Length: 131
Length: 366
Ligand SMILES: [Zn+2]
Image 1 (cartoon, helix red, strand yellow):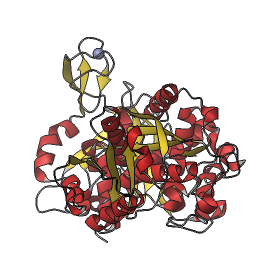
Image 2: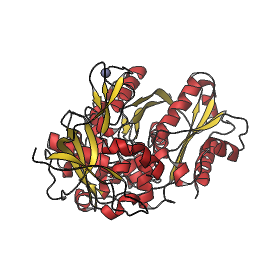
Image 3: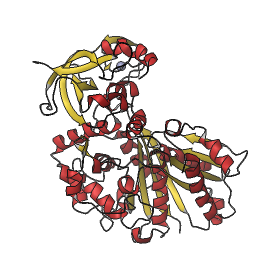
Image 4: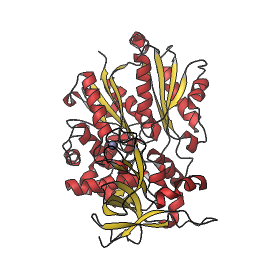
């Protein structure tokens, strides 16, 4: 990700910003311009709830270049408490302890350890939660 | 060979077999020549290299489903009456990139900003579905490994295959873990390749000395773009829709299909595709593979030349390879890979995780 795309995305990452349909109430992440449920064009920005559970996961040993210093990455398929799903890195959870159904919550963390010239790029990751 | 050499060489092969028949349109299927070779504008590049000036020529892109989407466009051009002979060439040059660069390039098939940028790769997306599938249906890694084993067995007698050697279930399970639970041998390889076919109108049929097959149906469908956002990530709805429409369009049922080429980018994609088509019950495809149902001597042979896994998966070319392979089956020119009595074939090509899916039904011309 280059600086320009990061600058455009940062607020959405940090705020876990999604959309809610004003007509039928369906929620989406990432943001949607058109409701996939009812077809409405009237949606509003809303932050997603920061808690959920791991529905699936993978231990990624061969990441892309930007993440090579972070291998192995624990990648989770997370269902948030509103039912919306997303894919994110799990932080402070070792490959041996990650489980399907594990409760997690969002934290803002550097996306990768790869050091650049300026501040690290931050985004959403998920850590273990008490529930 | 560079990307130009690949697509030209493959195209010359098909032009040579078509005698004096010259294409009036050129369509290239390709996913990432811009990243892989810093080269775009492949339509003009190929047409011009073949001495075809003034014809319409362009590239069609739908990630790993580019080849199938290109074939679909050729079908439409002929069916509409605008074209009488369309050259379709699928091409991908992947090996000028190192593994992590190729990994990043393949990740363009999903929503970059919410998968690749947060650390996921294309492989890891499939790994998430692999684990979900095994938990939901109590399928074992060993059962899923039946798919790469089958593909390698078929590739031994396939002259154009990349891996002409057989492997065991144990080899798959013990191969290096790329993105757990996906092993290296669950995954189709990064490689280069090109394949070509000519789509002709009825009146040009006689001018194809190498024989011809009929395109009975050509369908493309898309799923929700981001895998994460799908109501059920194990439901390949694009595969289901395209297959259903293709069968309806050709007036056929699944039991009429004699051979099938299935987009086996990973062991899990074979299983989910076959189940979405209705070939196997949910959670049942790996068992069917294990029991020999999909072997070349089985009830419904799949990936008869090795599939993506063992023939190779030059992503944008794979859909056209499938068409060329079905052509060989239906014209009785498949050599040692021949499935006896094959009259009708279905080919299935996906971009992303069933994000864009092309299904074609081809049959012999009597
Ligand atoms: Zn709505």
